[in-house]
Length: 174
Image (cartoon, rainbow, N blue to C red; front, side, top):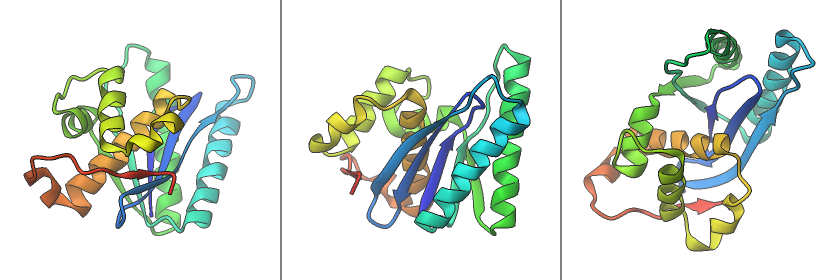
């Protein structure tokens, strides 16, 4: 199973995907309180991710690569979250792959500069129509995590997919 992550300290989006059947099993966002210290917040995130690893037998983690951001504190805190996830993966002998956001947008929408709305529309095109309602309440971070996971599958697990013209449907919440 793959755990894909859209990193952040305040909100971190996750998706658990079965790469063999291309099924999204779970999406969730982890919200931490700004009343807690950064260390406490990272500890909460790692605790939840560790639980996913155990529950879903995760053998691959893919994380959205951090790009530039005008807020230096945001960047530093997010890098700490990414580092903590990478350390957890090392301790559990799980491979980690970083995915560039522009590359994800290109794979999902065909446009490396797509906005959040275009990403959501493309993901709902990829997923079966019957699953659309389950994404209505999803956080943007969860949508990005799904996109990161799909990109990983299509780049590394099923690279022949990109040679096909038609979009292959996936199953959400199998």
